[in-house]
Length: 392
Figure 1 (cartoon, rainbow, N blue to C red):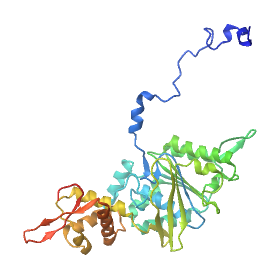
Figure 2: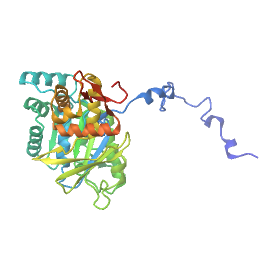
Figure 3: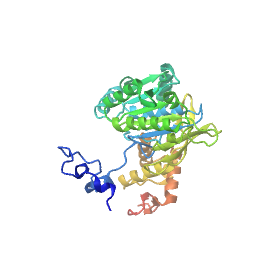
């Protein structure tokens, strides 16, 4: 019996000697699994530790008027000035020491030369430049950012497009879409910037400009944002609104599915705004926290006790002879208590003495810290704090 395939000429087979193979072997599209261990050892990079992953697309969403724009401007100033302003959003690089004007100028020069401060592309469709600048100035005043650093950040690191709404994608041909000239310009600008810039798109809809429930178009838009992040080594934060019924990001599922990390913002009715980490594909979801309106700016309502307790544990480890006690800390007396509080103030400018005390109480309850027992020359017993497992 002869089948149809038996009658085909031999030369038509892709395995035939006459098949026109490429003269040069192309690079494989498959991952080289011989080097799999290198990938396992790679750590996730974060723009804001455990909150916003670097080099990908994240989302902050909440109803109108809740403070999304103000919050993202706080984040922008955080990475542009090398500071932790919101403790739950700790930037990858953060360090600051109070200094005189001459030293501040030297600090700014060193930070810019070493790419510690990041560039920010801020697309603010709903506010004009004046509104954005006044908002950022208020934030800088609340967090006591020195004028020389704020001025340097705005003049050298901020790339602002304000009061303008443009499509990222535009139609061409029959049902096809391509990057708009506007999006291409954003892409080229990000590509030229050093390090890994932050790009804030506020709000998403004003640069999407199509039916939000169209999942095909939403996918195209999110893919474009993903390429913007990946190919330019940028971190993209989309500002969006929630669905009134579900509380999830409004519109097509692609908006939710394509982001790596998502935070919701909602007014509590207690004069504060609650942030909830609803999604993180590259790490654990973080604990909720609250922001309060302080004038025209936002600050974190309460510091994360676990994080402060861990900072205290590290300080105690580095200062084994400090003789820091709970009593001394509560009273604020003694060199050890004052030195610890000064150390914590560098990372937590708004930290009060009792905040540190409560954080250490929780660290004691969890077993991270323990109280030792040391008898002094006067016969009195003190209880210096120690990290569990270290000699008393």
